[in-house]
Amino acid sequence: MATNSKIEWTEQTWNPITGCTKVSPGCKYCYAEVMAKRLHAMGTPGYENGFNKITLMHERLDQPLHRKKPTIYFVNSMSDMFHEDVPDDFIDLIFDTIRATPQHAYQILTKRAERMNVYFQTRTVPDNAWLGVSVEDKRYGVPRIAYLQAIKAKTRFLSVEPLLEDLGRISLKGIHWVIVGGESGSKARPMEEAWALRLRDQCQRTGIDFFFKQWGSWGQDGVKRTKGANGRELQGEVWDMIPAIAV
Image 1: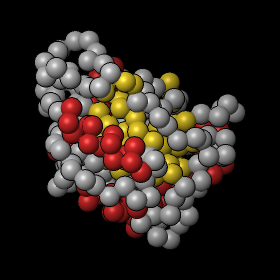
Image 2 (image 1 turned 45 degrees about the vertical axis):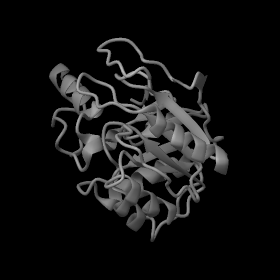
Image 3 (image 1 turned 60 degrees about the vertical axis):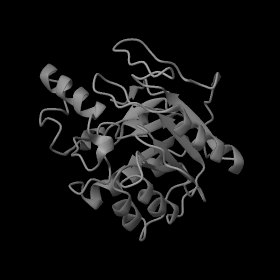
Image 4 (image 1 turned 30 degrees about the horizontal axis):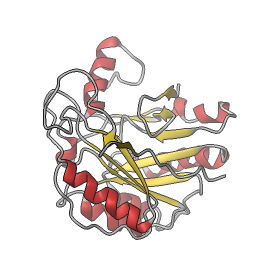
């Protein structure tokens, strides 16, 4: 079933697809891979095939239909909807559910921005579907932004997490929301405060909602900690802006 989420910028996760493969440096220490291995070992339904094989969960497609309360869903937190092994017709079924539940908002995040762009060249994005791309660095992440900007969608967002380097000035035209965060885990790579501040300042200048998710395993003080939170404050302030749900 759809589950309550510990991810700060959403309410529930909905995983009609499980499994994924790595495509860029942001995938190196994938949290979903670690979690999937744990769930596989526990015998949890949906993870019988491990993480590196895409599994289509037809039985989960109708889960949001049973919830009347308006909810923000992060779709496929344990996969990537636009993975090359996910057929277009299964993606169509996911969007059938999204269209049938206009009371909900659905956050769809991908590292396969080019395929998402191609998919929507012949389809309309529902107003309650928020489309986002991961932007972890200049080489792999930043080019995804243009593919997203070319899609006609009511809400477009960037997940700049883990932020692995200074992105400099980036194009935010047509972007409505930017999430920034550092990496967690024992092998986490550090994020510098200046990198996050540069993105925050660009969002402020252009009126874009900015959400600072976390420092990750490396704190603002440059110290790595294996346990405990390093906080969500950026220059002493919590940034938790989020777009209004489209209804």
